[in-house]
Image: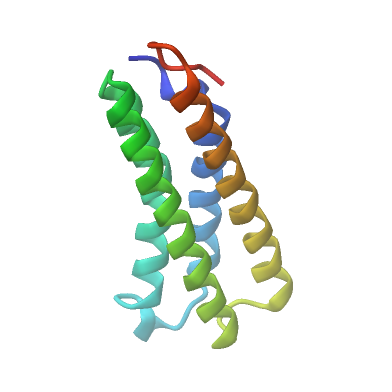
Length: 125
């Protein structure tokens, strides 16, 4: 078990979550329990699953939670595309968000490989 807050992927996913909250504030009120809520939950799921995996003190468990975080990042990407298609997000903001999500997914994939190939302890990046 180690401090997940020191992981760059957790830091990036945390700041992305805050950004999603900021951007979804301007969504239509009738989307509060729809797309707004879905995007916030998907964004939140990424850093929370990284943290939970780090707290499990087991390589297989950490790998499982990284995979869940990857899925949540993909879900968020899809939701951003819907928000953009509905003109809830300006194209420029949506594109920047999509770039950040893509980068985060790459980082999660790299971290997954690093953990998978590590002997017994969890690598700290």
